[in-house]
Length: 269
Image 1 (spheres, rainbow, N blue to C red):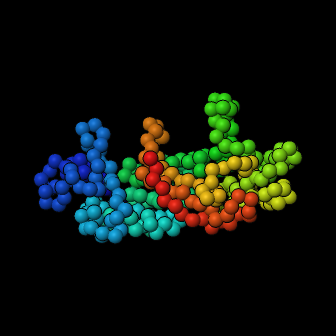
Image 2 (image 1 turned 180 degrees about the vertical axis):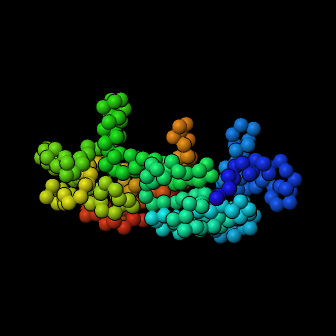
Image 3 (image 1 turned 120 degrees about the horizontal axis):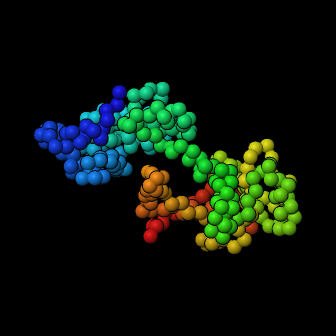
């Protein structure tokens, strides 16, 4: 079974064995936190993929840390973990420290995790990441805390359930609307419409009123991505990456959408 890394690190941090194998107090992959700095946090370094530093690998190799990737193919994650001394096990294996999965885990699987095992999803995180669930939760928060406090998205309808309401609103404002699949990403399946007849009702989609006067870069629409890591919901702990990504759409306002985008790196202050 996987080792309990925290316990082993605590036991060896004060032993003479550290001097023989590894100095854990100042190792670049370990950050000590908690009361009396006795809780180790494993720190990953992106440049380890290129440097192939053996000192970076020593923690994963010494404690026989392992990972498995399930229902997804993330070459970057695999490269990062391998560069830090982790070894990959079969997706069906129960002997692992980290599971990186492309789908949400069932409650019984989450309850079966040991203290040495981590996964890359919080339970029910799709309440925020699925567009239909996010929309419904924002509506619920507007009812609970007031519309003004959560007026953070344009008028939106979930189709086909709210198709009649959408058509009624469209008859009053025929400006452009934007259509998005409820469970897609990276701009896939997004398009603009000027008539309800242009919408396919074969799957669940969101239709939102298009912003009339958006901020533009050289007359091009763009979106900004801020990369955030949430390590805890209670208490809430959020890390914001120091750089963001602005993606300029390769189409001008008033033209048909071209899904190609031009990356522009920006510094987030």
